[in-house]
Amino acid sequence: QSALTQPPSVSGSPGQSVTISCTGTSSDVGSYNRVSWYQQPPGTAPKLMIYEVSNRPSGVPDRFSGSKSGNTASLTISGLQAEDEADYYCSSYTTSGTFVFGGGTKLTVL
Amino acid sequence: QVQLQQSGPGLVKPSQTLSLTCAISGDSVSSNSVAWNWIRQSPSRGLEWLGRTYYRSKWYNDYAVSMKSRITINPDTSKNQFSLQLNSVTPGDTALYYCARDRYDIDAFDIWGQGTMVTVSS
Image (cartoon, rainbow over all chains, first blue to last red; front, top):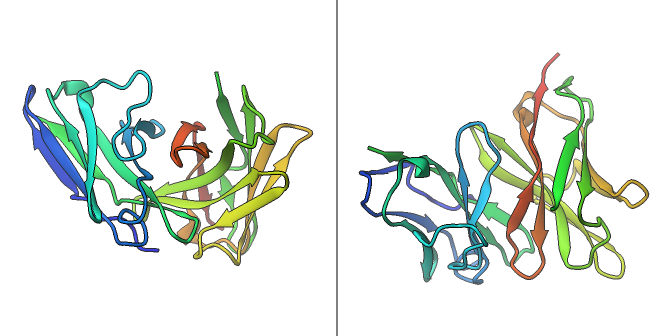
C-alpha cells in the first residue's frame, strides 16, 4: 500500500487560509469516507483534527474543515493562527482492511 | 478520560525481537466498538500503520502487508493492555512507535500514546 500524497510544505500569513491536499487511489481515499487528518506540533503525538472527511471532534476549532473529491481529500485552515504551525497528516482506511497515511505537510505561519 | 501508557526498551539489537506494551486506562481492551493499533514514525517513512487487534465476539488482528511476516499484536485482558512484537529487526525498524485507539464507527485514531523511541543497533 503506497502512502497518500501530500505537498511537503505550505505556508500562509496570519488570518489567511491554506489548503492541504491528500491524494490516494480508488482503493483508499476514493472508496470510503474514512479520511482523517492529524496535527502534530514538534515533539508531540499526532492529534485528531478531522474524521470521516469533514467531521471535527469536540474541541477542534471550526477554522479547520475537510472535504473530498474523487481520490483527493483536502484540509482547509481558515483564519490562520501562529499556533496552527505544525505538521499535518492525512490517513485513509483501505479496501484491504488496513490504514495508510500521507507523507505529511509542514505548515509554516509566516 | 482514556489514556494510553507505553512501555518497553529503547534499544534493540539487530535480528532480535522488538517488544512494546500499551496499558489502557479509561477504556477496555475488550471493547467491541474500538480497535487497538500500533503506528510508527521515522524521517524516512513518515507515519506508518503497523497493525491492530480488536474484539468482536472473538479476537481479530489486521496487519500491514509489509509487516505480516514479522509482527504480532496481542491483547492482555488480565492487565487491560496490548503488545507489539516485531521479529528480526534491522536498523530500518528504528522509529518512534505509538500505540493508538481507533473507533469502529469512524476509523480514525482518536487517542494516542506518548510514543517510544526504539533504536535498532548493535
